[in-house]
Length: 268
Image (cartoon, rainbow, N blue to C red; front, side, top):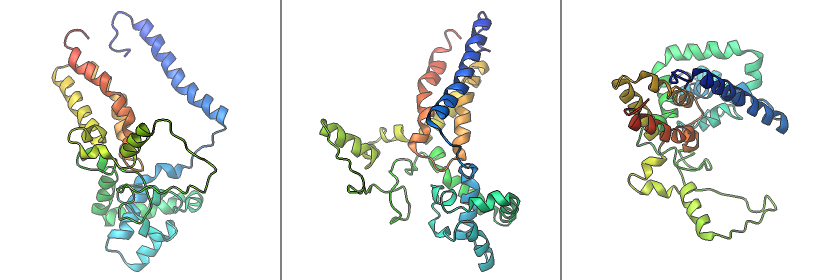
């Protein structure tokens, strides 16, 4: 934004500084008010855990190698799910052992990466398939039980009514049913074109094509405005999975991106 404002750069600089301060102070204020605790760094290890788990579950390895990998995941490598890293990096990962000796983990990780590079690449691509494959539907279904081969690709959602003393009452049963159809049964996936609006990959390709179009028009400074959205895209590549809620920031950026593309020819 600062680079685009030729006549009013002083004002743009002030707005940029204020925006940066708000982005830093607001989360810190919320953390302080809610007494939030820092999440363990194991949350950042979705891809490495997926790659090792897939090596144990799918690669041709010896019993000793299988036992070595499985020990890091509480002997639960059978819970490997190609498109969801929660079983890998969640409660099964021995994070206490990792904290005690992270070097042992990474030396093992690199050793198997050298021995099974194809498995590692497949694990990475399947974990982020919803971000680059328009036909992938892993984003569209609710998380459910593990009675299915793919933990997220089902429409079942069991809720123990007796667990909590909560008695829901809807004054708009029609709206409640519509929301349930979209959130749990993914009814939008049955409607052509509408289904693509709920597909993260749709926004990935829109971002790519929009950026290329601005570069082709030699509007490189405008293309730089999309850098934060590309940052979100790159972070999602290494997330625990690609669900539609993860792509909300990319969806929210679409009006701004379309404005840059459609109206930038008249006046920057």
